[in-house]
Length: 189
Image (cartoon, rainbow, N blue to C red; front, side):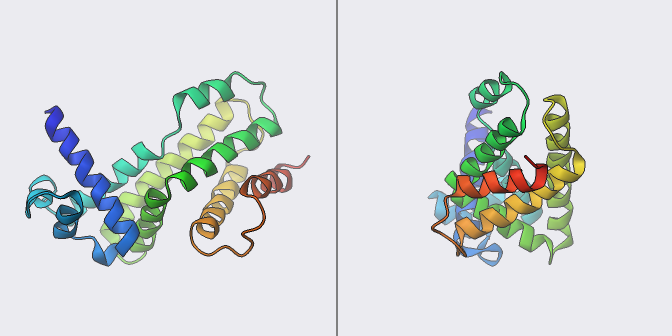
């Protein structure tokens, strides 16, 4: 079973690489096989339909972009404040920019969701669940801001990541400075 789990993970990682590099149109079972260096037909044996492959990619995105538990413990030991909230946001942005391929694949799936209802269903559920988790985490940690502010941060961070991972309108401004400005403007001083 562990070997099957490893193979599924490797195929999902290969799928994310294909998706980030070639976009949704390039995401085929054969392309995943080539990227993973496995015999033709392997990906389709694990993921019979494209929907199953997309579901595996979404699951893998969540795994690869998950926060480091040590970072959460370190930040969680601090007193709730606007400064701490900014640190959480910086951690999110750092993780997602460090995992450029995964984040680009995530953007590709979001774009594909606008065209394909079956992708929209999987992505919509995943995004809404993640958002609800973020709102609950923020509340439980005693951090400033509620549901509306967390939504505004999601919108702003998505835009910031798109800017930093593609073509930036202001590449000279450090990303941490942008995060600090976002927190200050959305939560006040």
